[in-house]
Image 1 (cartoon, rainbow, N blue to C red):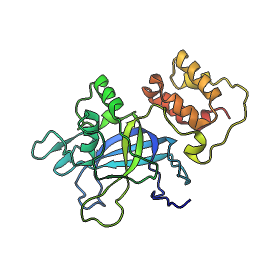
Image 2 (cartoon, helix red, strand yellow):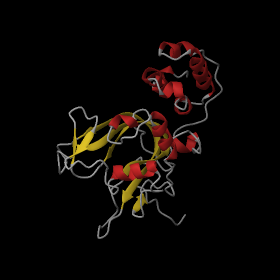
Image 3 (cartoon, rainbow, N blue to C red):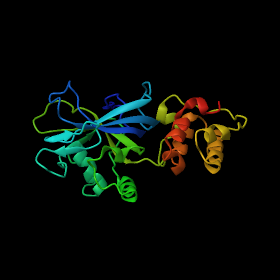
Image 4 (spheres, rainbow, N blue to C red):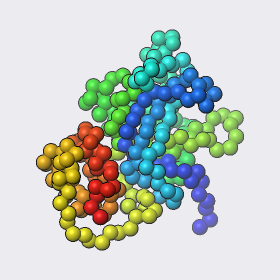
Length: 260
């Protein structure tokens, strides 16, 4: 085929569960006192068809917020030195807020897909509904993102007079619900069809982690019908009882609990 792969080769297109969301600073940066939003994201599913590297268990996503902000000691919130209440729309976080608020449909005309996985499509309406349902109306509070499973893309921003390819940033594009996902063999590059296995009763495992009887039964059914742990986790994380419980979610994400 007379074509080339223009992706960075880095993992950019995946679904991930935000395990930790906090404001922090980095002494190695140009401005060591400038806070940014940091997400520790557990990789739930690799959606990037051209990715052949080792899949990381967790990815750190750093999101810039512009100038003049100061974080508190616990990393829970930020405030602006000049009393501003809103983030600049030009900052990475401002773009995310704009998508959630429905003020923009994508990351802007200078956004460039870097993961080599096709056209960039954004739909943060699911995130918007989640924030409304939970009453989360202040994006300065970091914890409002905890527990969300999002689809991420590798995006770069091309600026005037800049040379070469832009730096790939991993940014959210939609609330992940497991729909419209490539086949497992395409997503990880190493999954294979699993032979039919005998059913194993795993209900006690989920019950010990704090799941109620109905959820434990559902998880047991999913565990026995899934081809592998990745497929099981993807489906299990859609259950509200799993998303809302740290202990059950941790048990689901522990591959040792999946019947082999």
